[in-house]
Amino acid sequence: ERKRMFGRTWIVGISRRTATASELETNRLDVQATKWMSYALYPLGVAYAVYSLMYHVHRGWYSWLLSTMTGYLYAFGFVMMTPQLFINYRLKSVAHLPWKALMYKAFNTFIDDVFAFLIHMPMMHRMACFRDDVVFLIYLYQ
Image 1: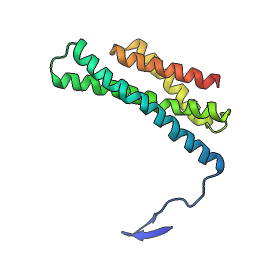
Image 2: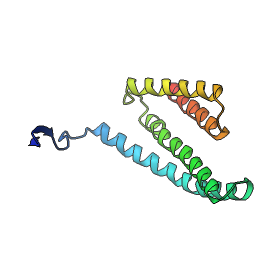
Image 3: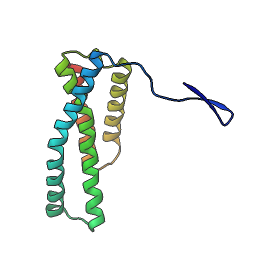
């Protein structure tokens, strides 16, 4: 639907195309995988926060909070990558994974690895880069 406002034509609204059965199944599996991963993530996140508070040296509460939130960010990155693996496994197909998305993941993984080796960075960030490698290798295997 097109609307005329402020002297310009704007395209407004949501596509009225209905989802196919395979798209609905993919969306259902995506929600299921994300929910299962979050069930594992929340207790592990709390355990990491307590472990960091008890066994790591921090300059203050702000330092502890920043360190813990960084760990959560890396964990959420993992949670956002794994549903695609679950979908591929359950559907026994990778046809729904677009070629452009796979190439983006490949280039992103390669560039992250190069910078992880060449630039001084915290060990947790390097582990996150190599975690992406493991997930990408599983993508390639599938």
